[in-house]
Each structure stands twice: as structure tokens, then as C-alpha cells.
Image (cartoon, rainbow, N blue to C red; front, side, top):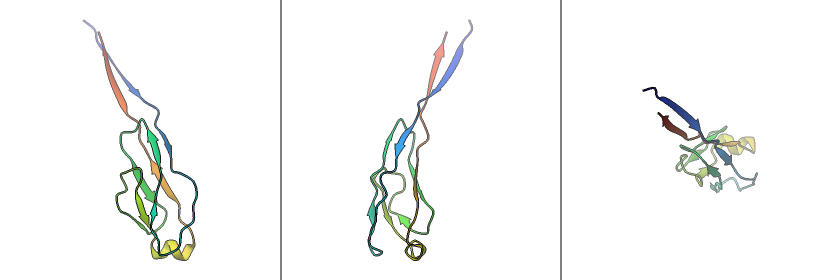
Length: 88
């Protein structure tokens, strides 16, 4: 008997949300959305910190460099889900 396995990766869909403005001493609750994902990871181009960078609606507090630069880029990364199908 021959067997074949197919691995199908669902296309992940994500949206980090709209650009926004906050005061320098505030934290920000992100409003990301994602579908067909295995995990979530928020990253920053700056030196701020996330309360939990692995949830869609993470909280971000700008760091001193973010404040000095006047802006920061936050990125939402979502790898897709792989499905395994065995055919006989």
C-alpha cells in the first residue's frame, strides 16, 4: 500500500490596527486581529515594552527612545497553521 501525506498551510491573515497617537507617559492597548494563526508576536522598532507580546490586544509602554524619537513602529507577526492530511 502506498501512502502520501499532504501538509496544507492555511493563509494567515493579520491586521495590526490603525496608526494612533498617545501622550508620552501613557501606555497603549493594541487592537490587532488575526485569523488562521499558530501564534502571535508583537515586536517593536523601539525600546518600549509589552505586557504580553503574544496576545492580540497587547499593552505597549513606550520607552525613552520611543519618546525621544516621537514615534515607534509596532509589528504583528502571525505564522500560519499547517494541516496534515494522510491519503491511502
